[in-house]
Length: 170
Length: 143
Image 1 (cartoon, helix red, strand yellow):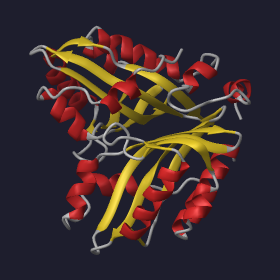
Image 2 (cartoon, each protein chain N blue to C red):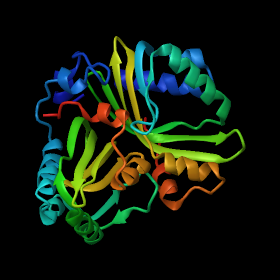
Image 3 (cartoon, one colour):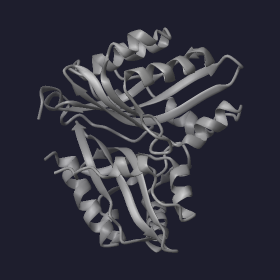
């Protein structure tokens, strides 16, 4: 049990309505700041500042098994450079997280507004595996149908609204 | 082993034995269960959870639910695993997923499983497991 777990132990966590992010006063972790740096870089659409936090041989699985993994920093750069120009405003955020040794688990939402005016919000959970302070494996799990339908202009469902109206983790 | 993960292992054991009441014994009366987070409306309350589990029980056979990695902080457990089973019409279903469980008084009160229903839909048509699904699920089970 690490320091963070010890400090958080015994604090109440509740349902989605009574979010655990509210109930825990989390000390800064070792791995979460790396994810925060990646998020800040992506908010600026600074692809290279994202990539500085990943290993050259990163394996990025960003579709829950629907599509093949993206392998290597060069392929990740290509994917991010395709994504970035399509996004006008980005509000990717994390609601809760935990870490164990070299792994960071996260729950959050990839929310953004596209340049053609669609509002997309994809609640997800995932894990990052670290090596030498860099992300070497990145796995994200979500329902791809939500992503594709909202990119086509579908309105946000009540379920998604409920899931993303939680406080951001510190 | 964390106490939240220890409870989850009991849930897995009882579910693989198709013991619906055994699973429910670990759920809070006020559970909010997103069994397909954001894709489907959540189940609210133990009575609704019983109905869902009973339906699942009829559709899932040879259940090989397993967890590859986990971490817990306070009363919240994060997991990464696969929900693998044979469907009622004999197709192999393997849904890689990540989940988050919130506990109160030792019972699960919030449960959010993030999974791609599109992956399951493909497998339910009889398609073999894709290379990327196999890569995700051929990992050692967590201790």
